[in-house]
Image (tube, rainbow, N blue to C red; front, side, top):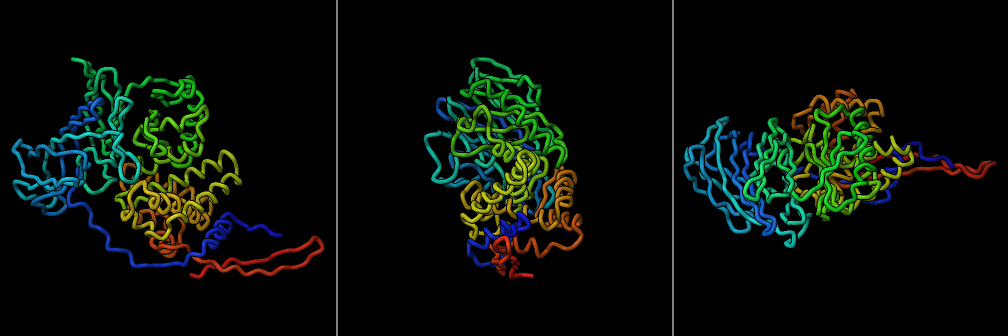
Length: 475
């Protein structure tokens, strides 16, 4: 019996077996961009782990992208705004409803399009790990057993766009003996009065705002790899045994996609167990349950790839999240193909196909903003189906053109935010023919395409032979 001639047909057969119908609904009207853009933060924050408290003052510079008399900032519902003031220190009126994840500020003078302004927000609240969210992972905690504040938790006032990049100076005060880690260049800490102050400066616009704190021990691997480990309960021997694996993955992605501008990486043990791992500029957080003498390379590759697709190049808006999550998930499969061969790639793709069918019809990939980040639906559609779409694009373009596309995307858009349209235009530039049909079917539609299978069985001297064709219902 003849085998299916390509991985794409193997995946197609699995998709066909799901018996979903293709639906091409009109996409909802795209939400407008945020009416303002935040360009810089200066944040003064103090963490009090024994009462789980955060007290902070965020000074932010913004530029109006349309005329504004008031604006809305987004902030975690556990945090209460105490005061809002303008650049001169004059108090501004604001409204924060109980339990809301945003608050409105009335500006003293309306802003014209393109006009800049500076605001300061004083706020306080608690992130108790015992108070779990109703759904989704825990994205912020402050505890004597370790603290972390991830940007998706909105622990500082943000615009509506979760992929905004900005410059940030972060001043953090902790109890003496605790270590702080964050994106940006770290200045030497200073300890006075039983407290330690850390300063991090991210001078360029990056995906800043990740903060980790706790009583960590620092380990540099004997191999000399540009990786530093910060551990609490994990055996120190795990640093050396995993350093080379991390270095190999970074070297592979650097060769395929272009080297990172700053390859130094802090790998941090996290106390949280509701998420798999988390990547940020210069940081990789791994929950204690993920650690072993040899961390699975698929897990490492999956999250190290975000250093290219969410950090070096980033989606412009929540609608464009496939460019981070789908490419990172498929980069994992690329590395496994490199490390373990084609059969390992086939197994990875079959795993992805099954995961993509969990909640596939909830929304098109291009409507990722309709889905709660990190939710099962988001992971199924944007991350897992997204990775399968990348595989299908590889089949359409061919291996050589596909790898040229990924390298060109990483290099041309380094330090920039990109849209699905940007990626499609680049793919068409690399491929030659238009790809509207591909992106309409796979990115802007819901459902799984149906396939028809026609075959003929022949008796031969050796037994039986099956000749067949898999046909798609669309041109």
